Length: 420
Image 1 (cartoon, rainbow, N blue to C red):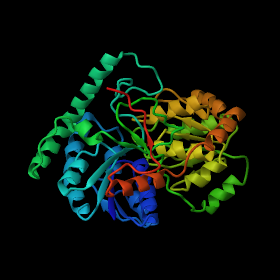
Image 2 (tube, rainbow, N blue to C red; image 1 turned 90 degrees about the vertical axis):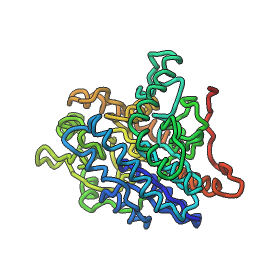
Image 3 (cartoon, rainbow, N blue to C red; image 1 turned 180 degrees about the vertical axis):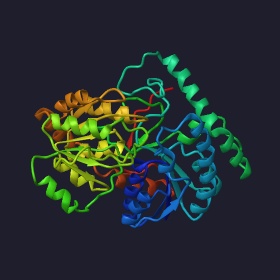
Image 4 (cartoon, helix red, strand yellow; image 1 turned 90 degrees about the horizontal axis):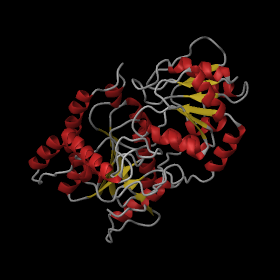
């Protein structure tokens, strides 16, 4: 059996597919990943022996400019990605038995699978963007809706129209070219009636947040046994546990003066800092011995050794920190990040810094909550509830899904779908 896994997105969209590919390999299934050709993604997949099929432009070339991408940028990128999927996935999936798609609105993946006559699964790492009568598209989950159910339905219709405007023409042009009829609602077509949710039940409860028949697998974790760099080990051993500060692939979206604000806030709390460069290229503000800079590093090992994790609220970072039992301070910027920030605060495993531009005082105050003994105790307790077998569950489901019974499989948790 052969499976193609595809995504276009940041590290948080690619690493879970690497974890799933490894789990599939353990079941005797050959898996390859079709993803953006960023160098760090190629290195990540090569480390675990999973082939990379390049798809579209690098993500860094799109998001790492001095300013956030504009609406015009989105309208240029969307048809480019659709064309790349029809072209690249058609060749990459030709000898495959199934195709699993995730990441930024993977319009084109289901269509290629339809043409090839193979099974297609849509997976997501959060519930943001799944149709719901209860939550507005773009609203911050975890906060009550200011509108009623009827208004939410209107907003979801408007959301579908927005997706159609971005992807509809390109998708239907390519469908027509391979002899497929047009689709009226691109968003619902891409999502399918039964998407998979690759997120932990503790961190991301469904709570009837979607009207779809969701199958939860649990988060897809990629085990990492790499040792920490010797210089980092020396720093960690030279004093009390430091605070980790990193904003991942946030570049143009990173808070202004993020490094300065974070370092000064940590110092105000008497804490040393491990500063992750990330795509924002964070750098120390002085030569102080209390700050150590890291690049690519084993976060699973590092987060077990720090006093708290200050981050942007990506699904992967939130899950890794929670599993390590590390208190978190989330400074959300875009997309699903406000959701994870809200969940961290609701669970009592850290704090969420509201607002796009934190100050030294506000971040220092939030750190007080994150560094409190009660927060550490709660984070340790929650860590014991997080399952680590999500990738294995998904791999088994995928194998079973293309079997003769075409069933969902054993181990998946069916979400509580609401009636329409």
